[in-house]
Length: 72
Image (tube, helix red, strand yellow):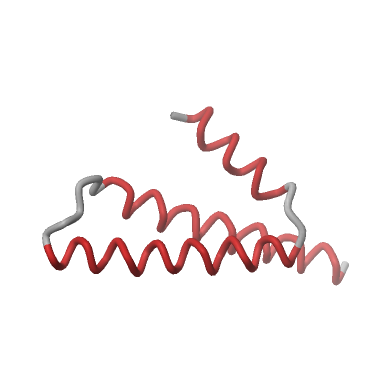
């Protein structure tokens, strides 16, 4: 599990600001769709909800780190 997380983080860190914004929009859309699937009882992979939530947090963290590095 830790390897997947590390690989995802490295992929996110390799992206530039525009790609990170696009990734964030994509993840937010997926989160929205997963919420609707859960509400209608169609959600099969319930763990995906928390994975997406954590990926959103990772993207936001990397965006903030890059913004802080740009100011320094």
